[in-house]
Length: 322
Image (tube, rainbow, N blue to C red; front, side, top):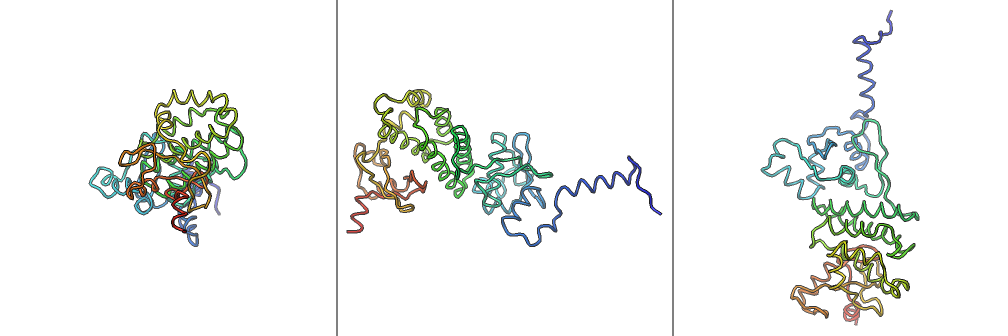
């Protein structure tokens, strides 16, 4: 005849331990799961992990194979190079935001970007909100989501994860576009904070988001009657707070203010774009040297779909089709 274990007995402790272990699904639950679902399970619970990432007070138990295959050159070098991280299997990232790092890992493991995740029992991931702009959002929500895209873009640049960088840029375009559908720059809350984040989180040669902010401001100046006639106080305040943004506005301008001068080979829209001084330092004109044309095209970003290197001058399209 068996009796129930009394509270505090070793048998009771064993039962409690087993119950606690059941919070984390056992490895056999991975059988039959697809690639993305398997990646999510391994990331959530750290099953079979062989590498630890510490970020402030947060610890992520991760897997070298995922970071080597999809994590970019930073993690490849840290794991395989002759550094202490390769010997200790511990990577410390004290300057990063744990939530942004969690989103980066979600993308690496499962290709998941816009959809967050709830706080699950036993999971090492924090609760992350959805950052999709499929539905119309109010302006504070738009601001919060745009800021997340900016931070993810900066992390993707830092760790050299090109697919994540492309995804963050495209989502930045789409979410920032929701702002344009509702209000002009002068009425957008905390515009200065947003522009500052763009300029402070990436080096000057990584100009994709910077250029998109400049083209939005240029469009604002032409298309908003109030800003054109009276001027934007918010924009002027931002110039004072972010001098680099002011300098970019001074040396960049729309190629043609009378009509779209570029065609996007990705979404096929005709759009305006800005012209920076080219490699041979020619300015106040469009350099036609082959190397400069190729370099200029490579740095373009479509302000409709967010594709990079997809803009061709309409006159060049006409020449190709003639």
